[in-house]
Image (cartoon, rainbow, N blue to C red; front, side):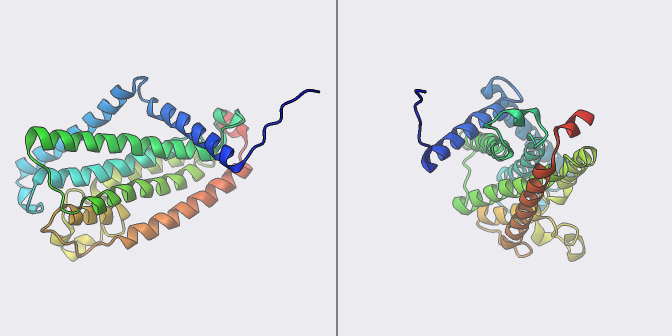
Length: 273
């Protein structure tokens, strides 16, 4: 009989949605470890291992002459940061809770919150890892000089959003073919170890070899990022527009596929698979 009615405005709904995304993002960040600092340290350690491995490989094989003239560590970091950001975001989005997840039984939870949280948690970890590593190298080793830092950060964000787009496509397919999706996402991540071109400079590659790489948006992103990071490198065989077009296209396909799957998903799928 006596009830207090609370008016729900668009602003209040937006605040509620933002709060849900925030709490679920924290949950996603702490998935690997309950202590967020330890999870961040593990992510930083993985990046450092990548840098050390490629530095050793380039030094032993004598490939340092093929790199861009300038800071060799920045050359390695520019490729590894983009590669890890893209592939980890793809994995995070693909592994997020879909329409058949038990988490969707809770009323405020939906797939939009799950996808947004997975994307933001990946961006948070990769941004902090990149900032910490660049700071340590700049202070403890030698000064890091980036010619155009703002466009370079833009390429970092493009690597992230393109990973979101690819992950959305995998996420839309996952409830229908979970086994295939897991294999396909793993093959995609492993193929990008070479196809991303993080070990090569596009301007020095022969045309017949370049054809094996220029289909990949991540290849263009890394090459353009190096063009912004180094004052003496001007990329001729890559563009910013191509990865942006591919990203928008895959994002639209992924959103339509996720909407279609969500409308037809059944909780019995996850019980039987």
